[in-house]
Amino acid sequence: MERTEDGRYIVVNGRRWRATDPELSEETAARLRSHLGRARSAVRTAGSDADRRAARDRVQLAKEGLGERGDAWWDLGVAQRRARAEDRLEQLDTLAPG
Image (cartoon, rainbow, N blue to C red; front, side, top):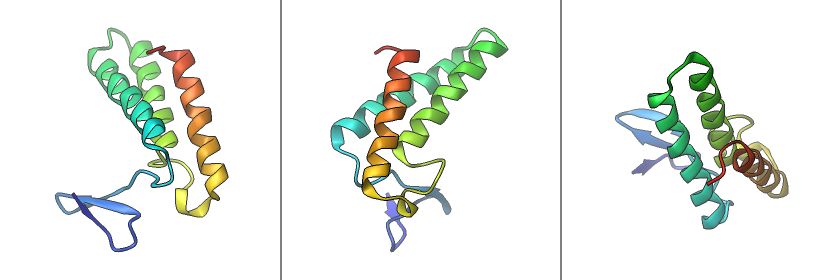
């Protein structure tokens, strides 16, 4: 996967996407990716608009935790970034226990 020189973005088919926060521990990032995958699956299989909205909200939380949405990770201190990831994990664990 190609990254920009500054490491802030990955490039897929010529399009830039915000990269995952490199300061996250592998365990934290893996847990967030697991929630992300399960939430994306729930979006595809949702039986109602309410279920689809709830699944999309979980996608948003996981992407924020990974640093791929919300405040750019490079604009935050490391402690803030880790706290954000932990907060999103706590919310996701409550909404969709693994």
